[in-house]
Image 1 (spheres, protein in one colour):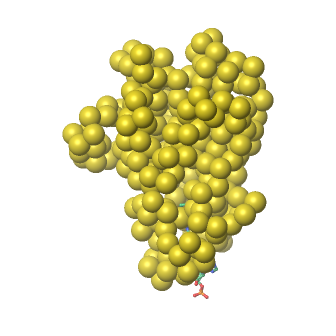
Image 2: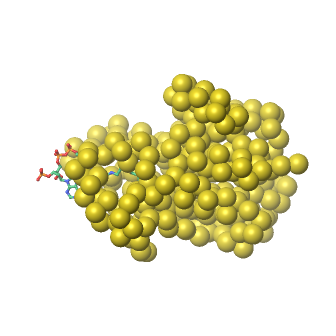
Length: 240
Ligand code: CAA
């Protein structure tokens, strides 16, 4: 039987590439989305991947959604906590609401996604947790105090989960993408984006599939001894 993978934010951007790549690798994939019904319907139509709508920032919704996925597809073996948003603003202009929205989705969302599947993974003695962090969690970023805090927090989450899950056959790792050609990066004002790209030694934005292939590797049996790690995929823009 094929393994079951849950990809949050899995119908658009990097998440869509992850969902497709895992499907191509033989996983049964469930992709979640928060609000864009049209994009999700189009995604399912073109890929055959089932989508589920819930707010990862809400624990009860996440738990109920995960129960539904498991009832439909079977126990979840691989969790890719990818859902993320930006609410960029220089700190002196950042509102408590912008702080809270990003913390709820990007950080609490990881807790809400992993916590309900964790007991089952422990019982079955197998699991793969892959959290999509960011280069900006490693280096910080102008106008992203909120986002950088969550993405740095992701690294603490996987390092801790790795220690708790290791004896139960569960690995937890993070990927830190650099600037990838997605709607999120395209939303940056063009002039600012051009200056960011000029600072990437590779001379280009990354492709979503370049992150998806990292996920597929971390999910595989071959990656069983990689636990608590961070893979940076940023075109040499930043080294830890
Ligand atoms: N470094 C230094 N200064 C910067 C800057 C930067 N990266 N970006 C903007 N500034 C400057 C501006 O030039 C401007 O300076 P002046 O006032 O001297 O002209 C000042 O900061 C801010 O200007 P505003 O008051 O007009 O700012 P604003 O309230 O309109 O906000 C912004 C604009 C939100 C900061 C916008 O510039 C922006 O979106 N910047 C990009 C932030 C960014 O990189 N986000 C990453 C998104 S992609 C992502 O998050 C995915 C991932 O994981 C990599």
